[in-house]
Length: 254
Image 1 (cartoon, rainbow, N blue to C red):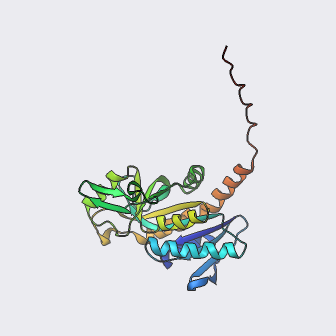
Image 2: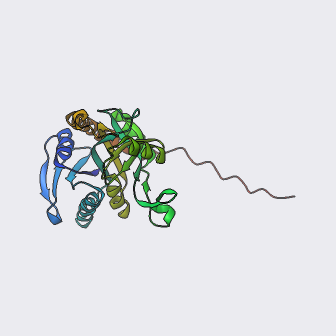
Image 3: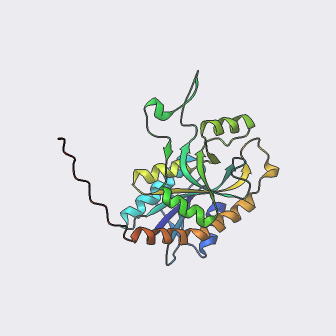
């Protein structure tokens, strides 16, 4: 199984590579540096594509296209890194696997409040990863499952945090790249996941309270469990299911 992992910055990329052991470097079109870790069960390619949804989408699309043209397409794309957690569901140092990857601020402000782009008749604002895959990966990593919102501006106030929580029931984490990665994956028909570890609480900006090192360590630990979870999921998918029941005979009216 070949997996592309897209992070924002090098520290996140290195935390993922630390879970895989030695990573070799390859250069993609556009000068992107890709770190490759080959394993018997899962081969990880890890790319630090830059901060924000646009950079994430561009980097992911480049890597996906290069792999497809080389005849070695990816089986899965994972947006990964640290992010903010919404209390009480995602405390500092915890792991979140997204069951919905949502663009939090893609839309329009109106006199009646925010309107998502879908209600304006354009595109989408949410990608929903395969539920069984989410459950398997979350269980292996000891992670919570819930919505991860993608923002272009990190939340820095209680009012904004409350607004996001009200608009997106079940939201657990905030980050800046997931939706961009998901858009690139969807364009090429590749499944997507988002895995976040919590470095700070979403709300008033307090850098002194952030735990970036702990979140990066948690990211490494989460990715140590990923190959086993994916391999187990693949084995389950290969097992024959029960024979389908015969279709009922059509009823005749007297």
